[in-house]
Length: 412
Image (cartoon, one colour):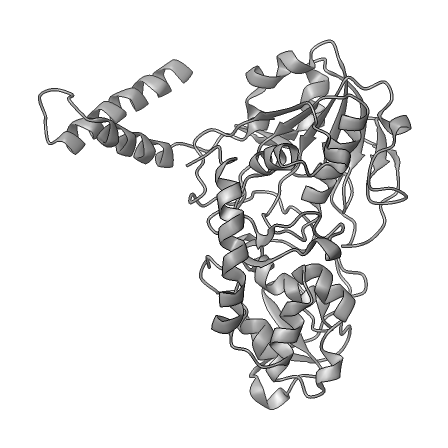
């Protein structure tokens, strides 16, 4: 069946090339025409995540003691849906010794910021080492006995989404202990643009470890290569890194994540709006936590009720035990029908600040700086700058980053 599928696609590609040449009798395309046809064909084929490309990485795991950094998104897709990577590799007789879990835990059920305890996975009996509890970087003791560490987690391409920080600390620890790292690449649903304020070194931390924009436009595999080659690991070390690439994906191609990557990103709209509405995490404004429309709305009880026709009341729910403004009527906007955007939009945070009755209630200064990566954005909002003026100030650093980024792009 696989041969037949590829044979049909080869015929289709030949047909496209003929059309592009305006020649129905023979194939005589120049390189640009062939490239255009191949790109069109790629856009019609299913995206194959690296975890599914077992023929590429199983030889690298055979006969070795393996550690895996994983959560609920670490799956291999099949005709019946999907199976977890850990379960699949165990069935293939790969010797998995332990699982390292990031924020939200191995099964993805913990709240944002909630500590995750180490323990034992009930389904596999494997020991789980939390990287969002007592320590966020694995110790030499926790890595002892491992021959290789596999990293496979779905990212959403936003600097303050903590999985890329976990990736960097894994790479750093493995570099220090001479353990190779294997990254199984997955698409970034926000890879179609680069935008936002750039992290200032003096404010770096777990919500942004490097001087990169809020939205960096790279797959997690591309970003791993950037971390390694730009000397961002502690002491300038380099990790023994292998990235298994995706098939049939481009940065512009829309990718719908089939499993929510964390409790409060339930759908494509929330993921697309997350870089923009995530800035509310550094304020007292609720961004939909405590509702079923997380990162698809915003509001607060201290905002001007006469400025809005929409309101809601946050209550504790899955992924948000203690939402901001719990039990209070929040006035704001419903963004659940917002078309896909390709920028970090400041219109909503500017609107919320404008309509906050007591301005001193708005910002959580330390938290906002950590999310924005710089104290400048808060100052710009407070001083009344327009969105255009604020975004113009980002451009020099964005252009600088894009030049660095270009060296590590693996996909069109």
